[in-house]
Image (cartoon, rainbow, N blue to C red; front, top):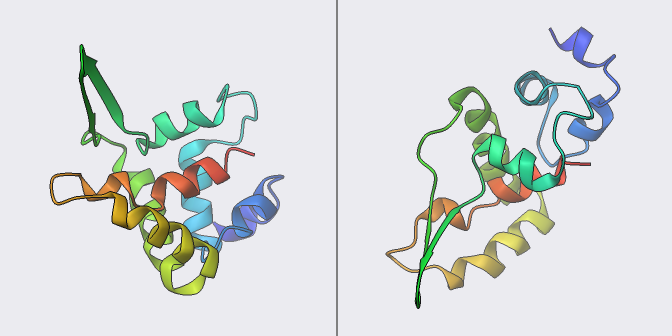
Length: 124
């Protein structure tokens, strides 16, 4: 499985992500696919990965919610990468620490985790 992954044109991009090794990178590539035209933008890739929040607005009230229906085969390696990156990558840790104080007990935790960051970084 990983021998074939190393020969793909995007392997270097995926492996450049913090703590995303051969196995997790192959899983992420398998779920995202290797067609460069598949996603129109980074936002489209984040929506597919289900890491972008849902914003509902009516009048003066605005609510940002986490998505709960997702592709577990893609979410699992992205979450593993994101939380391992907190200890392995100073940049990921700084980004997480920057966003963490902005959340409250009523805000879904996944709205501030670096999972969304990692999916948008892979949007080349």
